[in-house]
Length: 403
Image 1 (spheres, rainbow, N blue to C red):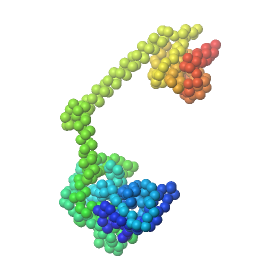
Image 2: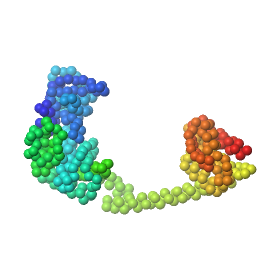
Image 3: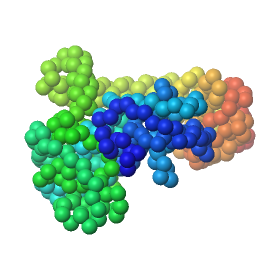
């Protein structure tokens, strides 16, 4: 443990060490192993430190097979001198705040409601704990947050201690440990005793405020999302900017944003209904107009039309509207875009021609895919021919069936 300087002093920002070896891993990434290091490797829910070794960026740190590997941006120059390590302190202290905050929040849920934490994740912007419960109320979350912030305001010391397995009986541990050697306890006196290998500040006061942002069900657990310290200010700044922008957009004070937003949403829904009604009316008018221009057959009518850049959904509605007005009509609509052709085939209830068979013939002409039945079918494919040519195929196929 003497080589792990982050345990001796988590506030250590720079250090010097000797290079023991430098190699490439199986993926061809360079890593360096030092005789001692202040870089914390990923573990226990806490991400690794970053920084530099001899001004070369350290992008990842992992403990593998008992050695701490510093993955570097490029190979370190061969040197017999010391390696100068520099920790990205802002990142390290942020992790210290979040990790200690997790201990405090977890202990608060246990203290108040006996809700155990089963996992912890320290993310780039927010952190989460998974509580082994199926429900969490607003009141419970608020009460746990309040207790956690009270512990922080008291400025209690955060102590670390290496103990043996036989010494564990002297501590009221929050949960059983999974290790029997190199046992490290993180202790907040009279509140939390927990085995942990992460880095933490020396006082709860340095954690800064804790704020629960949200929670959701994850299988049979409740995942609680929270932030601590500097991240609280970041969240406040982001949310305040959003609120400021919304007050200007909605022309409403902060307290009036919810009703103003609801009014706008309701108005939008009404407009959508009106637009949909108008679209349906236009399609109905278009259907009647197409019927007036329909080609007359011996026993019915036929509509063949090519459109440019219409949606297939719109053509489907148009075809259904036409067949609703006439039970003896055949409808073939083709939509032509820059690089593809789509079509809709429909028939009135008195016609016996299979639209599925017509569709199959059209699909083979454009290397396409589609579906449907004898009454209604649609499809699309490559623009191997023009829309007019595809429409002519449909017309000829229909006339063959009629004969």
